[in-house]
Length: 277
Figure (cartoon, rainbow, N blue to C red):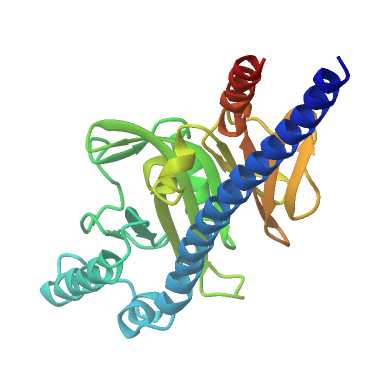
């Protein structure tokens, strides 16, 4: 009886230690994949800011900002607009994360884009249409000042295919009350998910919070009542959270029980224990 109690005690301790070690290994693996995903996101967002900044320094764009309005009926003006649009397309080809790029000129009669040049400033709805933003609101957004603004949760019909994503908007010239152009970049949810490690997509819930509001999430799209305040791995209730990021933008990943399921270890120990008896 005493031997049985001792063996049960030591087996239980050993079982506990092995299971804790396995959980820690899985947490470390998941955290590594989470941090790599965060670096992917940070790099893509950095490229957007870099693109917006570099655009303001390009000769063809400054020419459009400060020259007089072109008359599309004059061949010279039409040719220069087309050349500028070709430059914009070339500028965006190397970054597939920015799926569609528009440059609106509120006081002019045209819109440049990575799709095509639109002389009347209106983009055909069968090519690109914002389904959940009223036309009047969209016109106001593209004619007023925006400073590195993100608009999450947009529903888009693109080439007659419905999808969801977010928008990035910023105005030109920088640090100037007058508005000569608004840059709009569309980023689809599909491109956002491509930044997440594939091993996490089917299990974990990813959340990006900017200025205290949800910028993007691949879960239910709701902000939990309580989120970890510090970076690292923390447990709130039955949920493990990984947190990364400082300042206005933070990244969270909720790890469900499935990814830390070690029930197979319990079954193994029970099996060996029965065999020993």
